[in-house]
Image (tube, rainbow, N blue to C red; front, side, top):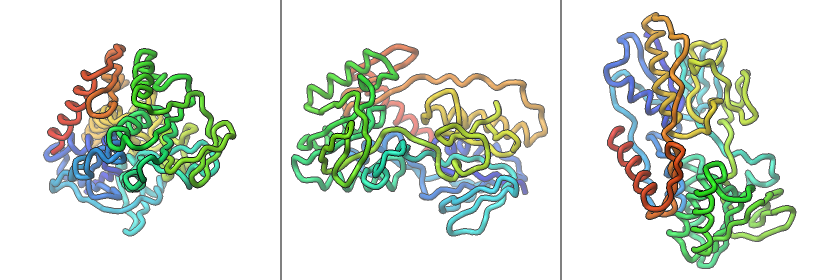
Length: 355
């Protein structure tokens, strides 16, 4: 039997399983899925779980249950590319013929002293639960700092405002305007939305150090009751430790067929892959679609095409609480209720397609 091992049941891993199961897997191929939790999590909704506006059970799904698939609930601690083995924490080493690495990302603390010790995060379900517990237990009037005003920072700040309007929320942004990577229209809209609700936006900030209950902006100490870090990501440590070519975030450079150069049978999907787009669930799914096609051609000893279609993303959608949102779709900036409805619709469709 040929063994396909998938590390991580995130958006990329789930799309690959969805495309292969139940009847597009050769009879001589068995699939192993390894994940540290026994269900698929909607990482794009972790901000809402952290803020306390959705329960845990609403942002997860059980993995597919089909005979070619075997599930191993464990942590991946290493990958031996040359000997084709995956090292697990509580199980024996797992050999593979084909490997798909979709282990996701971790916070990038940019070498800021104390950031990894004294801040909360939302990059994993475990970290998000800790953040929720910390934020929900804060007394009235407590001060919360959110470091990083990208999509995650903006969404958790707005959602936390709706969940806990009694808190004093400050959002620290390195740029002159939040969400500057999207558009000026969106940035102005979101900045105004925060200002109208009494959420403090600290533009052109520079966090130089974090201590317990204290963050330093441009060297000035500021006291907070909780500090949440959403200022960038990097590849999972297991991937950062691989002896292959990676970028400064630890993401792996790949061939046009999504495999590691020199390792035709090892693919990387999602946040650990070096791609020309910012990492998103949408990108991981598009990658997953192409990986399945490449796998099937290689399984059938068919020649690969000279090139694969260029991945085209549909756009970006973000929320400002439950009633407002923003988006960049087909290079058009959207603000208000429409993009929020669109985002809710996308989530509903995802649940339907994967349940």
